[in-house]
Image 1 (cartoon, rainbow, N blue to C red):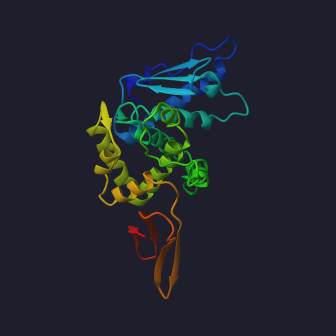
Image 2 (spheres, rainbow, N blue to C red):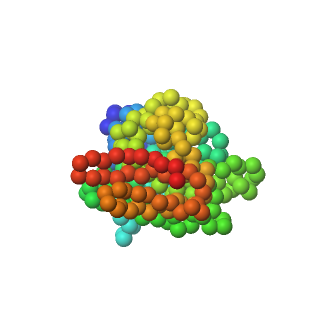
Image 3 (cartoon, one colour):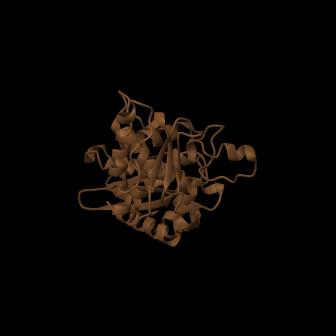
Amino acid sequence: MPRRWREAHSHPRHYSRGQSELGKEAGLATQSVLPRLEKYTASLSWDKLDHVALPQGAFGAVENPGLIYVSIPWIVLVPPARPEAIRSLEAHEIGHQWFGNLVTQSTWTDVWLSEGFATWLSAKMMDEEQPADRKHINLVVQSREAVMTADGSATSHPVRREVRTRPELDTVYDRTPYQKGGAILLMLENWLGEDVFQSGLRKYLVAHAMGNATTDDLESVLPARAKPVMDGMLNTVGVPAVSAGCEEGKLTFTRKAAERPGNVPYRFAGRLRRAAYARRM
């Protein structure tokens, strides 16, 4: 860990008498998660990172540049709380130091560039603690399956939507940019490949450091085939249902005709080859 990060105030120091030991895990979580995020992004976001534990706050945690404040109940390890839950929270908030602070979305329409990324990145960092056969389970169960159940209802909305009024702004931080945004990023990573996706994200962070970015900017650093897929997934509601079949050695994919048009990525593997495609159905 770089020296300037080691000197950051990662250990809570102002708990009520007799509670200091309960906050120890939060400091350890920062020291565990931060190097992983630096390695993945190949960059440092700020010269220092401080944490402040507050008795009360309007939100559970807020990721200011170089300064994260967290409500005390969120970071004290009171049994039966699990240390990994605190590390997951830290991964989300520290992830915002890159996605949200170092690069900030240009408008409220692209809140997912902050919250979707923090959701996906937190799960990715926690996957490093899991065996290979359990990777992605947290994000799939907590985000993808949950949002698939709700998406397409009368009250659902796209990940990207224009915000014109104050009431609309009050609802911009609902589950959709977090959970569906994170699930779409997981889909893209699996489809494009981890190395290709990571390379694109590093270019995105360098190109827009200390500035603003849009979904178009993100799409521009990824392979061209990603754009129609992302536009379809981000700008419409619902989840495409695709069925697969194989007859006489021919693999077929069928999509329900009633669904909205758009590109759907799919990946299949065989003994001799594997390939990744996006088809318009």
